[in-house]
Amino acid sequence: MAADCEKKPVLEMMQADGGDEGCVTYVLHNEDHTLGNSLRYLVMKDVDVDFCGYSITHPSEAKINFRIQTRGGVPATEPLRTGLTQLNEVCQHVLNTFQARVDEFKERQDQPME
Image (cartoon, rainbow, N blue to C red):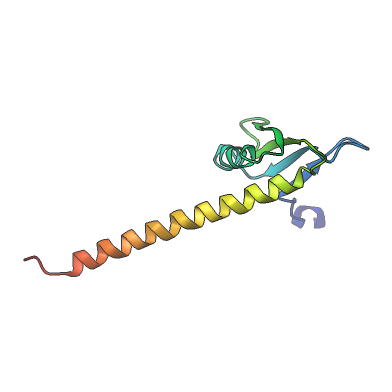
């Protein structure tokens, strides 16, 4: 029963024993193409990234395998962290812009017609 209550980690790092830190596959649980493709796009913009891709393991499983390969000895965690930060900033900008437009619309609706 205690095992059922334990939470599965959101992010797992899969790396071969003694493997290169610049070549890592991450497993992101409870995610799909929405995060996978957006994050892949932002990570690929990093000049130190040779390859970045993701796959959905099976349609009935809510997880993606996210692979990053870097050059120049850069650990794969750096572009992943940068990509996640940039994605958060983009989402926050979209949310703020949307909320500003909703507020403007509501203000115009409250004004009497001329």
